[in-house]
Length: 237
Image 1: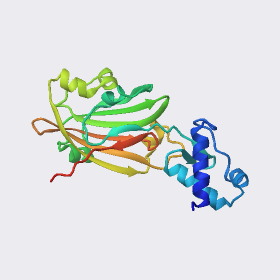
Image 2: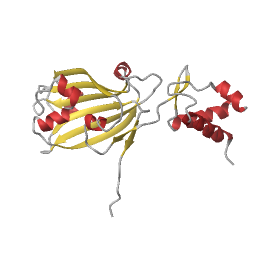
Image 3: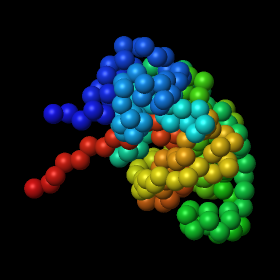
Image 4: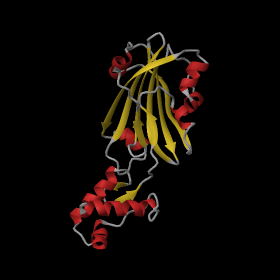
């Protein structure tokens, strides 16, 4: 026999999937749902937690539970593709904004991650990706200038990888990746639409050319409700 909160969860899912509430609308409050279902507040909380875990709602402090978009985009974890290549396959309004393109001397952090000396120049590219009017990805790219020369705002708005391969005639070969879940930084809050979100998914990439030289370190910072990170694995016998 199913527990009461499971039954309430399933009924709320059916109501959401039949568009009783639109994306961005608030669910009735815990008190209202408690009265509707004639049950305890604790039972309603358990049902709402299931809705949150399964991507139907986002709990926003001080406001309540908001219906969120359920069509998460698949982001390949193991592949090495540019954002433009992914965006071209998505049936959504996608916009890239370049917030910073500058040549900098690497600080200690970049010297370590890019294996460069302090007097070498590094491109710093800060971009946000907007899906249907919401800024949900912050890309922070750092590229060694003596391997990737001549970057412009237009190139960064389009595709850095296309420029590297088609204009500079270099071959991008492989990347080492690290995925973490972190608390958003001040910069994340400033550049992304993060109201109500307390964590962010960060994919760190170390990207190499075909001669095995490291040329790029990047952090791709994703709002967690809009993406599903996918991989395909096969067991070798």
